[in-house]
Structures are given as C-alpha cells and as structure tokens.
Image 1 (cartoon, rainbow, N blue to C red):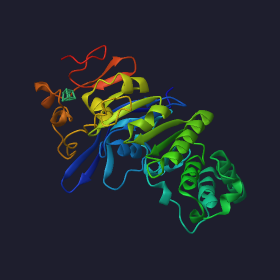
Image 2 (cartoon, helix red, strand yellow; image 1 turned 135 degrees about the vertical axis):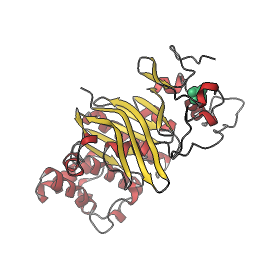
Image 3 (cartoon, rainbow, N blue to C red; image 1 turned 90 degrees about the horizontal axis):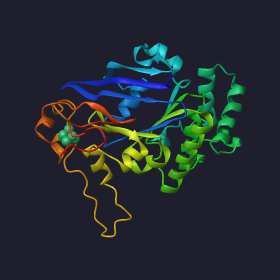
Length: 325
Ligand code: SF4
C-alpha cells in the first residue's frame, strides 16, 4: 500500500468574485521514506495542495472533489473533528515563515511538549523528556528546552520547528518552503537534516519550493505545478535531464548554467500565470507557451505517462518523451 495517494484533487476558494480554482485535478502518490518535491511559480497551487492534505485550508477554501488517501484512509471525507485525531500523528507541517511561529513568551521546549500532551496523552514530565529527545534528534542540546525563542538563532528556531513537526512521529511531513528565510549555509544544513530524518524514520515527505535547485539533492521525484495542475512529474533525472513540458524547460532555463562558457543571461518566462478565477479553457500555459499549437487553447491536455513514472500534460508529448513537432 502507498503511504499517500492523492487522486484528482480539486480545491477551490469561494470569493466575492467567484470560485478560485487553486488546485484543479491534481493526482500523485508517495511511498514510505520517499520525498516528493512540489515546484512552480507563486500561486500555482503548491501550498493549497499541502493544506488540503493536512486539512488546514484557510476560510473560504474547500475540497470540491477528489480523494486524499493516507494509508488507505480518506482524509478528504473526514469532518474537522475527526481530522484533529490524525493531524500531528499522521501528517504534520513545517510552515513558511516558521522563524516567527513560536510564541515568544513560552519556552520553546514546552511548545513542543504541549503537542505531545495533547495528541499523545503524555504526562507533562514525559512530554518534557520527549521534547529533549527531539531537540537532540535535530541537533540542539536537550538542556536548551527551557529557553525562550529569542535565545535561539534563526537556524536553531528552524531546527526546533522541525522537532515540533516530529513530535508525534508523523508518517508524512510537509515542508512548505522550510528554508526560504535562511542563509545558504543554514539552508544546506536544514535540508541535510530533513533528508537524514526522513531516511532514519522512514517518513514520507513533501517539500514545497519555488526553487528547483533545492529539489535535486533532496527528492526522489518532482511534480512541476502550473496554474493549479501538475504540468510534469517524474524522477529527479526526468525533470532535470529529460524535461518534456515547455513549462518545465522554461523553469529550468531561469537558472544560470555554470558550464555555459558564453555566460548567457537566463531569459525568465515572459508573462504571468493566469487568474484561477477564470483560467484559460485549454492548456493553462498556452498564453505563455512558445510551442503552442491550435488545439492548445481549446482542449485540456491529458496527463499521460510517457515512460514509466514520467507524466506530462501537454498536447505535444508522446511516448518516448519527445515533442511531436
Ligand atoms: Fe504548450 Fe500546448 Fe503543451 Fe500547453 S499543451 S504546454 S500550450 S504545447
């Protein structure tokens, strides 16, 4: 059995102007111990996908269709009360901006221990001990559990946030831009730590970022999202060395190539993603796609498997991963 199976997930936000189709037919799966990277520009549905899985959608957000199976149990069908029994224990999140997520007037260790008391029924004494063990696990001396957030550096706060996410031994952990606010050295340390913990604890992990380079060393597979849908999904090698979708290629071209002797300046992708209130009827990348053909603006491309484990949603994709032009 897969750890996680997301099938045709649709999550919309109700606004005064209509329904924003933030996630519109997303499917993927994840095995135990595996890491999936979700990448794409801002507003393409990465965070909404994560919040749908953990059922932490903000007001106005609702799952309108699809299933989210975690160890075969359908999360999408659970009531808010039922989901509270599973959150933290089955799935937990490291949020964007975790640096400011701790309550400044409470000891960091207690903010972690509190989750153990509430969700695992531990006594206060047991929970403090557990907080110390978690600190050690993420490389912070256990005696620092009694310190306050202002006594921690940025990197240590991020490590403590990871300890908090691990408090109830989740099977799946979702990191939403967990290293964005950190400098490059600390970022590398945190990513290394997450990878080490994932392997040691055999957890599934979803890593969300807008930075493709972060995913190459940490993920087993990558899903490139665009305008609420997955444009391309495959192994790290598929995405980095055999990309097929024009959007994936354009994203990769946004990074400077250190082997390029001519030192070409990266182009960027002209235009902006479409409004998800009223997305284009065919391929949502069509208005920005240099390879577009007539059918692209009318018909939604299917999400097809062009080789084992490598999926693409583009009218020009065919078996073998070549573009039919
Ligand atoms: Fe470009 Fe058409 Fe493929 Fe969309 S379906 S990415 S518009 S070629």
